[in-house]
Amino acid sequence: MRAVVQRVKCAKVTIRGETVGKIGPGLVVFLGVGENDTNDDLDYLVEKVANLRIFEDKDGKMNLSVLQLGLEVLVVPQFTIWGDCRRGRRPDFSHAALPKKAEEMYEEYIMGLRDTGLSVETGRFRETMIVSLENDGPVTILLDSDKLF
Image 1 (cartoon, rainbow, N blue to C red):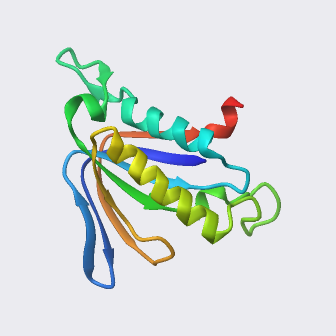
Image 2: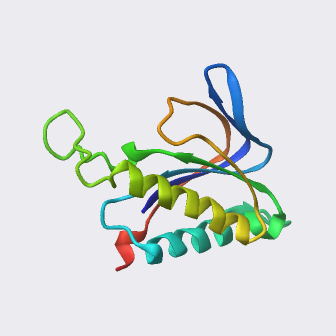
Image 3: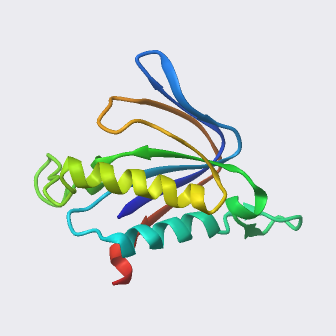
């Protein structure tokens, strides 16, 4: 699984003029599921995102997590994270999971974050979304569960 994680002041997802997910301070997670991803990948990214220490403590050092601070998370499905642009000019998405698997793992990921006690808002799977966010820092982190195994 791959995630682009951004520390934000606020964020929202709009579909056809309707706001379907909205948070204040916290994290936006753009989540992509790969064809070979398993529950181990999912568990790794749930734990990593919930406990990622990218919020400043009283000394200005990135030392606190979204979970420690009780902030919110907005999870947006984004298969394009799996786009391989090494050849040619058109991304190859052949390593992204098929929609059925990707949607199941996306939903399980959301449940996993909620199980940690986090407040989680979401985008909608297989929808065209407008994602608006105010990046804080900016702080943007790329996570890839495959890099560990």
